[in-house]
Length: 289
Image (cartoon, rainbow, N blue to C red; front, side, top):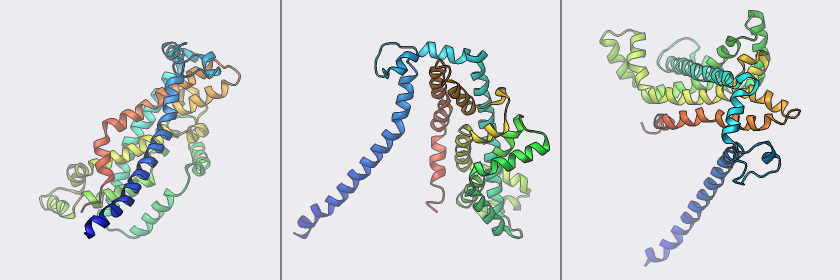
């Protein structure tokens, strides 16, 4: 009797909560995907259709023409920007993730003086906005003579305090101390233990940090704008910004900016799609001990 009376009343709040969660998730998905949908539709239109707000019409299909104009505009410099972004992002994310995870592993597994104080500095650095560091980095680059070079943008991107923090968390969750002790008993040195044992266990964490780093570097805009004046060294983000600024005077830039923006999101989508099983397991590190 009590089950019959309390059952429906108990399930009603749960159903309302589930409906609320589904509504919030649905709104979030729409908020995320609608700009991408607009970008996809706008990339198929020519300049006149864009200014007439005729995005949903099936007429004036100009996708291939816009794509051809994109890679021919300004002597095809967009392809150079795209290659620069791939070099900055992929190589920088790979080296940066390896460095961050190695530092996090050292903070977790080794004992040294002032370890926790140094790690507190790492956590403090996480809260410092990257725009605040742009001017000091420029002054350092100017003193060393690397302004307006590849290295002025690439080297600062390798250091990620948040990646070091994640590296320590992943090391605590994935690398048991007993396994390291067994490797040392078998005669493995510290470097061999790191590369042959710990790094393999930290694979999901390494991929997770890599994806975070890849996204941050690919979308990085302010640092290249401060460091670079040679358009041949621009990443996609800065190059599209210059074209968009020129579109106020030359409206022909609008379709190529939209097409370039569409192509600019493809590497991130591809990276997350191919590596999703690794970063999903990495995000749950430490949840089950």
